[in-house]
Length: 185
Ligand SMILES: Nc1ncnc2c1ncn2[C@@H]1O[C@H](COP(=O)(O)OP(=O)(O)OP(=O)(O)O)[C@@H](O)[C@H]1O
Ligand SMILES: Nc1nc2c(ncn2[C@@H]2O[C@H](COP(=O)(O)O)[C@@H](O)[C@H]2O)c(=O)[nH]1
Image 1 (cartoon, protein in one colour):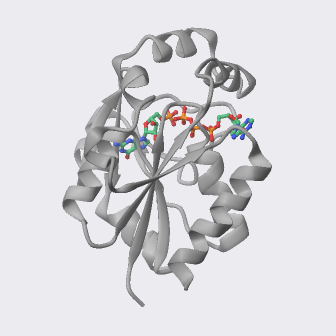
Image 2 (tube, protein in one colour):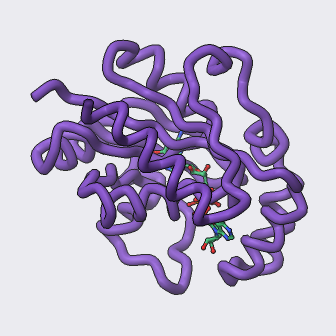
Image 3 (cartoon, helix red, strand yellow):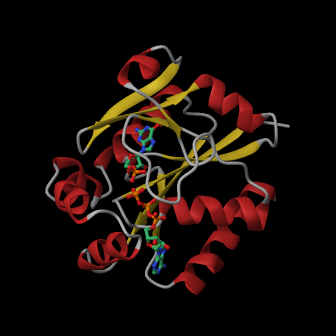
């Protein structure tokens, strides 16, 4: 089977991780586990949600790309992609828009990009609060350059990405079913 990679990107709180989890449970699409130096959130599990690293251990990984986001380092490794591809030919990966652009450059033939957006950017902040992110972490994040950047589809992804407005979860699920059908037909 031909390997394929669905790269899910968009602003913080737009629902990238939620969509990636849903694709795993509803369509058996494995998720790539990426690496980060940021502290673990209350419900996150090492090796499942992320590989939680120190700057020293992260530097030892074979990274395809890495970014700094709101003061922490994130990166995706060849090993993690291969682990996901051992389970199925179509896998998903959640990254910021800089990472999405890098993936299109590195793997142009096998990458599809899904850009998530919302109608009101205020709802992103509400979602981070509901997710129980620490208030100081939310404040740092929404004043970061990365936050503003990821609200808008980068011009380089304009012709390449499927844009999905994730306001209403039922509508999102329908749109995802239609998208996944295009991979499987
Ligand atoms: N359509 C939706 N309607 C309401 N809440 C949603 C919707 N989609 C996701 N959420 C909620 O919004 C919060 C943020 O979602 P999620 O963690 O998936 O975002 P994310 O894009 O991965 O964020 P980040 O980049 O910060 O990791 C979660 O609590 C999730 O349950
Ligand atoms: N370019 C990359 N971006 C990544 C990677 N892993 C996660 N991310 C993105 O970072 C921000 C913040 O994530 P959070 O879990 O702290 O909320 C978000 O946009 C993620 O998609 C990666 O390996 N490379």
